[in-house]
Image 1 (cartoon, rainbow, N blue to C red):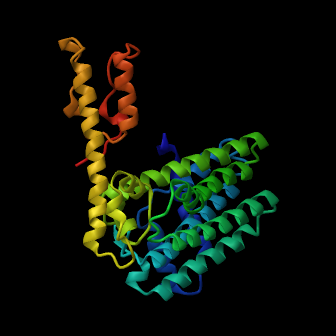
Image 2 (tube, rainbow, N blue to C red; image 1 turned 120 degrees about the vertical axis):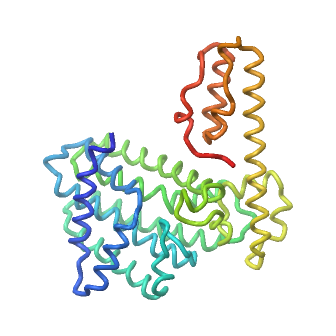
Length: 336
């Protein structure tokens, strides 16, 4: 389904190159290279899809421009985020702050934000201005909250959820609501677009934080465990702490890489416990099924959506379903 958006995404990128042009050829080349260096364009795609709630063709030019604005905000925030985290890699490549300097990367991020303000000012729509102002405010608060919470072992799940709301969910929600507003969707659809983006954004960040613990560079474009190495307490770390509190007793800014890796391994141990439970569920169910209906655990052990897999095993045992779907349905990520 997403193939139909390929041409539109290309138009957005061309629009980005146009509106970010400066009088500095080196800056233009660096900015262009950064935008072309991977990225899933999730926010752009969501904005384009939510614009379908209104009159897309009539408002296409404004929709493309708003998609460009959202992608520029996201990119500028990543550049600033890499400076704060002192990150080495992003999307499989060296970060701008490491390739040049923190000062240079900061100025590039600021320049991109200035482009956003200039382009948004051209929209004669109060809703867009209000939503964007609130979004940028929340993004900044999110960074402050994260900075204040580094290495804080008293972090609660609620604190974590508030943080990811501001750091991730709010911009995805803005992408969805902005697309619907610019396309002149109904007020009901605009509200629905915002809610959809918000909850999707929360889920998206939780999955990203999980992959930071177990995914590795091949999945994320960055080394495994970077959040914890930088003192950022995410949900996997909280789960590891609940499972094994002593892991965090001496967790401070001065903790060694080895001590931090122990916590990552602690979460890996929790993950293995879940896999072991799923395997037992398979064995128990197979003991009740006829020979031609037995399920092959080896076929499904690389799936990582354990909740969905466990639920459908229960449904088979209860006679609600006959068998499992193909492994792709339960996500194709190998768990080592």
